[in-house]
Image (cartoon, rainbow, N blue to C red):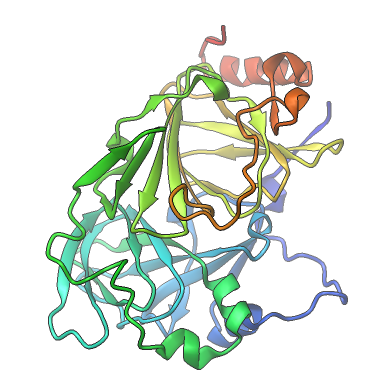
Length: 361
């Protein structure tokens, strides 16, 4: 097995392909004039340098990572101390994960007079429904507030290719938000199959998880259904000295490292593996049908949040990937006994460098 480092692949601009056409979404990105981050992963979202985004009235950077394949997109936004964003309103969905700082968001439907406001902090996760009016506020007197937003803008904007419709449509999605008080409380509902349905998660790092033995490494997991959206998320954690089984699925899964230190391998079948080191704040987006495998090389449990497509409640497609079923049985997971023999050796070396023992059984 050969492995190349992903370190020099984080912000390279892909080579121009004359066969590619400019979508309505790509045109909009160019017109916004915001710097775009390209590559396979972001080493640390908290350290990303940002520029000014006039539309938002705040500092930001768009993320156009290889693994999204224009199914969804993301951006990082930062509000200075005591500052607020401009009011936003658009047809596409947004799921927000707060990276640092604290503040609040005010929302209302078209035609409503009263705004509802809810508070958030680092680690909070929430969904903004389509066509909602919203504005973010930084409540800190001396610290910036920074968040990651994953959106469905690429598909929505390119599907309708009409900016007026996307940014000015008045329709109210009352099935998503009807103006009721407490909509963004932490109250949620547990569903069968490790599913937590809610509109607001106060702290991703403290969400209780359930055993998920199919994925290996004594790992735990919880699927999140956020805000009645088609965008969705899940949280996974695995212990010290372990690694998860390799698997593959469709594009657009934004994997944010919440805690722990380690690395991921990503590769297209029968091609060279690429290694990406991570820490809290790292973001990895595996391309569609690329195998990827996560390794905890640190001294604490590793937890990550994946914001992605294909809600359990509102699926976009009938097809389901076999992410927990062996490729030998027609699925998309590589069992430990079938993986490259050098995977264990690389992992052992990474653990030895940190003084940690292997805990795989």
